[in-house]
Image (cartoon, rainbow, N blue to C red; front, side, top):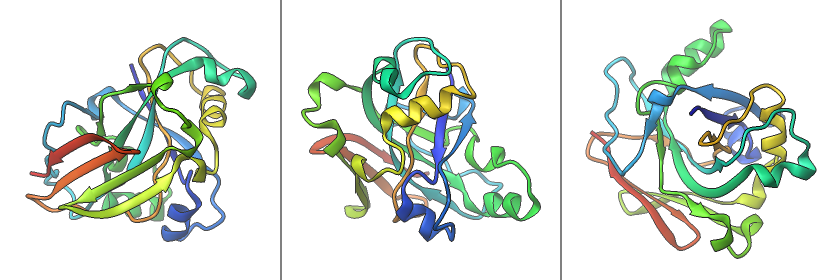
Length: 202
C-alpha cells in the first residue's frame, strides 16, 4: 500500500502559494505517513509550522499502469477525505534549495484519512463538496468539480509514473485556506453532509 498525492490541483491553492500558473504535480508519501481512525496528530518537534490541507481521497481497487483516462473510473471504488499535513518551514527551505519535499510532506502521521464511502453512495460525485473546520470554524471549502484535474485525469496522470495497486490511496489536492495548526486544535472534515473526520492536534 502506498499514498500518492497531487500538489497544486486546485488553482486557488496554487495562487495562495504564489504559483498561480502551476500544473498539478504528483508525489509519493510512505505508508508510515498514514493516520486513520481519528487518532490525534502530533506536531513534530523538528518543525516550527505545520499546515493543514483537506483533500478528496480515492481508494484504488485494482492494479494498473499507464491507465487511459476513459478507463480510469474502473480503478477506484470509494472516496473519503484526508488532511495532508505539511511542515511548511521545511517545504519552503527545500524549495529554495531545489531539494525534494519528502521530509516536509511524508513524515510519520502526515496523511490523516477518513473512512471510505463507496462511490455508489455519492449521488453526484463531480458536484460533491469537501469542508474542513478548525475549532468549529470553517477554514476550507470547495467542490470536487473545482479541481484542475478531475478524478479520472488524476488516476491517468499518476499511473504514468507509478503502478497502482489495490489498497493504494490517492490524495487529490487541497483548495485555498490552508493554515497552521496548534496544540489542542480540533479538526473536523466533511464530504457533503457526511461528518467523516474529527481529531485533535497534540
